[in-house]
Amino acid sequence: MTELAGARILVTGATGALGSRIAQHLAAHGAQLVLTGRDADKLQALGIPAELFTLDLSLPGAAASLIHTVTASGQLDGIVAAHGVVAFGPVAELDTQTLSALQALNQTSPIELITSVIPALLASKAAGREPFVLTISGVIADLPTAGMAAYGASKAGLKSFVSATQRELRREGIRVVDTRPPHTETGLASRAIAGVAPSMPQGLDPDAVASRIVAAIVNDEKDVPAELFS
Image 1 (cartoon, one colour):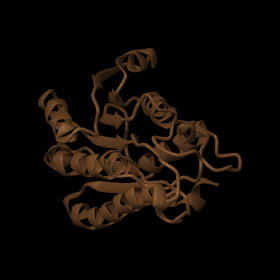
Image 2 (image 1 turned 180 degrees about the horizontal axis):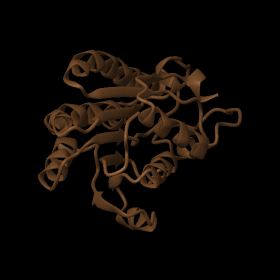
Image 3 (image 1 turned 120 degrees about the horizontal axis):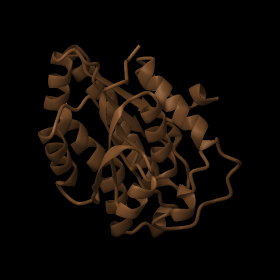
């Protein structure tokens, strides 16, 4: 069991429907939170006791800069990467701008967060804590879907990176876990950066998904595929 009380945890995408709920559950466990998002007013409106940072993680170097700032002011014991964007449409209509945005937010920035935070998590382990990184690649990483090829590729790339990173960092005592919840009613599909979402069945309750994700942290899980969210 991972003890979250007193652990300093960074949650990115904290103003999103899923990120905000994950933050609330972590706070209920007694974690000391560092929350990020692109809208300062929305961060303040969360009403969660936390250190707040407003930034755009799609910008080159933003993730590394965030880790440097956060770790300069104290120990960091965990990261939950809950930020991301979605796009829809056939590959014949995919433009470079959309592809670049998907890769920057869904793949490059989480990878940069992970590579930048390793020294801090090693220090956390040395201090007797239980450091971790948690990513949310989603079911799309395992289920290539027509009309979502570029989005799926960005998430599958993240999952592949995490899978290899798990093997490298576990010997250092750093746990890296990827979660792949099925479609969840976060409203993300209605905020696509390109295209229109296809008709989808009712998704999972975001609070239940957030609770399951935090349970994976507490219970020392290493991989949470879609079927474990049922």
